[in-house]
Length: 232
Image 1 (cartoon, rainbow, N blue to C red):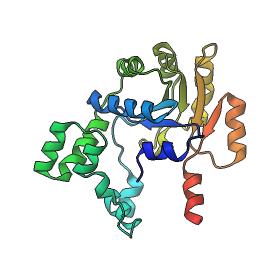
Image 2 (cartoon, rainbow, N blue to C red; image 1 turned 60 degrees about the vertical axis):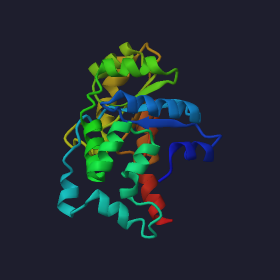
Image 3 (cartoon, rainbow, N blue to C red; image 1 turned 120 degrees about the vertical axis):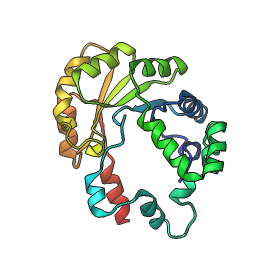
Image 4 (cartoon, rainbow, N blue to C red; image 1 turned 30 degrees about the vertical axis):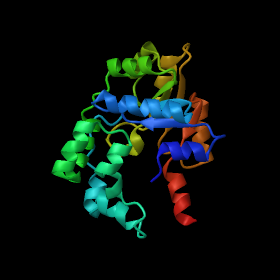
């Protein structure tokens, strides 16, 4: 696993947007913002579709465990998922010192639970987004908007873009598909400077053209890239 400083230095001519989760402890969020600025990232993509960790029924049925799975796909042992969650890595990535000390005393299991709690309980309300905007000059793009009401709130708080997204249906698999939510969101921001993007369910160029025709500025893809890499 590479830090985003390494990724940025490896792709100096690329357009770099950094996706981040809002942490309950704003010191963590601010640390990531400053690192993104120093590394030359051009925008912050704030994920707001996961205020709670979902129950992944498919993973439960298949016996999937994140730690075991990540360890198994890195058989040479260079960096394992457990290393990423270690005290050393947490300190390297800017963890607060008191939590690092607690993790040293309680073990890395404490650290895993701490990080889960930080993301799950962040409650990234509109005041939180306004605070983030006050901390940086980087454009802020909200990922996870699915209603016209939320889109209008995003415009009011001054974000630069919206990604209509349901987290690939992974967090809450009962929400509407982004392509279904896209028309009302495009209408809701019409007349503003906020750009609308979409992800989720894009499997072909035809899907891309549908989103563009409805009003999306661009689309993002995830799984197709991973599937392609798995075949190389």
